[in-house]
Length: 135
Image (cartoon, rainbow, N blue to C red; front, side, top):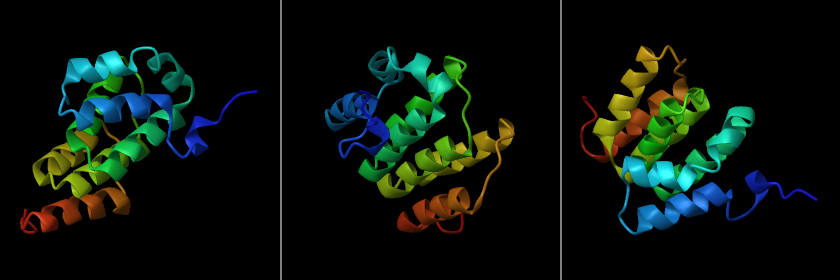
């Protein structure tokens, strides 16, 4: 019997590994790569695993870790989409990282990933929470 980690209250196992690192203040690209290494092959087949992981990071406000996850996905040629970026931008909102939210929106344009109201609203909210609403 397979466990559906997407519906697990604690989230997918890769999220748990990332949260441990992020809570210890270790939010570096190599640490994220190491934590995700064995999970990445599944993400190509099931992008919803990446979405669930990024969504968990968003809820916890771990913007830098979410950004590293996107970088690791792209470095490993795992397709990123609007949902992945929306979750990472939401992490920026919760983590009050307006510059990173702005950077991710720009990156979406560069990678020709559709941007929607959720992306824009999260980025605007991140700016607003930091008193940078005019940016």
